[in-house]
Image 1: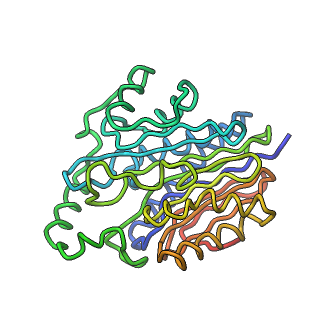
Image 2 (image 1 turned 60 degrees about the horizontal axis):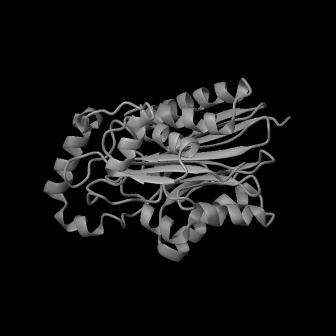
Length: 310
């Protein structure tokens, strides 16, 4: 039997001081929910799902209720969950009526021959499989309405550059959430969920819900979840790139930092990553000023907003 491990993240960006406590509290709550699953002998897949659900329900993060609004003032959500034991995965993109898109992603993984559903098709699948739909307005909070209004009013010159913010730009957050876990049976899993980028074009998909980009899990290499500026992460297939480095014999702590260096050097990308191998070794890294993270092993539990390497 293996000793379980759980690592979660809540987004990498230039987090202001007045938001630090909420982020640490949020990732600790997610860690507690996922750990309850692992502690009772549950699967890594169940653990990452439960951890991500907690963060989707927490308005601190850019996932579920409280997410960024797109250019039309709507919430559009993306999520993926992947099982390292079987390479089965489930993903949803551009859903507007699901409070917890990771729940729908899990249903797809378990009950569909397909991997990915988008928009209305994803919502129809979720409803058919017992996941209640909500109104899009239920996912919108006043803070984000005001944030979009201010952005569109005062930043017309930045609109063409929204996917190239500097890593210390406090007006653009990347509060994508994710989790990676190892269970007692030696299986690993990963999940990532996001509301995307502020003022994004309707229908835009980021890296979070794409296999190998924002999320990946394979018992022969590693489980990884990324956060940050999605377009460069997609172009580099960064989660799979990192897992491949670990399969080649590199330690997760090194591979995580190397992934951030690669992201910045190759495409001037900004973000963060958590990664975990089947031996229970993990890495946490980011090239932004801060990233909310937390981990728990049988021996130790820790949370913070700055970490590079171990």
